[in-house]
Image 1 (cartoon, rainbow, N blue to C red):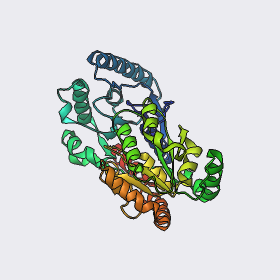
Image 2 (tube, helix red, strand yellow):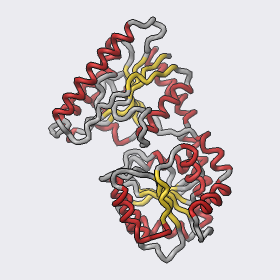
Image 3 (cartoon, rainbow, N blue to C red):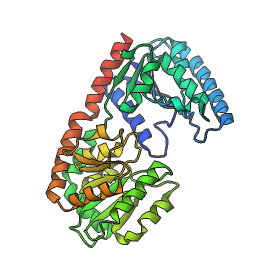
Image 4 (cartoon, rainbow, N blue to C red):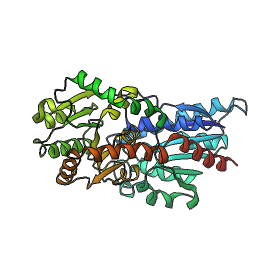
Length: 380
C-alpha cells in the first residue's frame, strides 16, 4: 500500500531530538516493515507554542496552500503511484492537521490519525481555532490509533463510530538493544574510564530528558531534591539531554559535584550504550504524556524507577520491570531509590525482567503486524 505520512507537530526529519520525533520515525519504520511504501508528504510544522492568534491564522493559510499544491501534484501521478491512505501522526490544539484531511478528501482515500488528543478546556483559550479544527478533523477520521489511554475519553465522542478508535501500545525496535545488552559490562567499564569515575562499584544511575521549562524542569528538580537525601550512600548519576533550561538543571545538581556526569545530547548507539551500562534508570516523570526513554531503558536491560504519571504506567510492569511512586512525591521517590541502591540483586532482577517484558509487549515487530491488520481492514 502507498501511504502518505505527515506529522504536524514535528517532522521525523527534524534535527532536534525528542520523543515525538522518535515515535514518528518508529511509525514510518513499522509501516515499512509491514510491506508498505511510505512517503513523508510534508515537513510543514503547524505548531504554535505561545497561543498567538495571528500566527495560527498564518500557519493555517500556509498549511492549506501546501495541501492544495500537494493535491495538484498527486493528481497528476499514475493511479498505482498515488497514496492509497493518509496517515497523520500526533495532532492536538497546538498543532492541528491542515494537510491530511484535504489530501484524503481530494484523493478519496482513508484518513488515519495516530495519537490524537482533545482538551475541552481549550475551547475558549488562546488555541481555540486549533481546538475547533481538531474536532472537525477527528470527525473525518476513518481510524484513530490511541497510544495513551488518557486520550480516549475525550477523543471517542468526536468519532463517527466508537469502533473507529483502536489502541496500540507504544513501541521501540528491540533488536537495536541486543548488542548493548550483550556488551553491557564492557561498556560500563569503558564509560567509567571515560568519565574518570573513581568509585567503580558505586551504583550507576541514568536519566535522559530534554531540559525544557514546565514538567521536564520540575522532574529534574524533584530528582535532585530526592538525591539530596541520599548523600550518605554510594551512587553516580549520568544525565543525558540539553535544552533552554540547562543552566537551571545544572544549578539543581551542582551540590553533588563529581557525582553527576553531564553527557550532553546522546542519540543512537551511544545512547543505547548508556542505558545498558546503567544499574537503574530514574525519572520522576511529572505529568509525562509518554516516556519513550522508559521503554528504551528497559529494552537495554535496565530496570526503571519512575513517577506514576498516567502516560508512564502502561510502559512497564510494577515490581517486575520497574517501580513507580506518586509522580510529585519527593519523599516517596527518595525512599524507593534508597531501597534499590541497597539491593543490587533487586536491581539486576528488574533489569533482566525489563528486557523480556518490553520485547514481549512493546516491540516494533508486533506493532507492524497490528498496524497492518488495522490499515488493511480500513482499505478493504
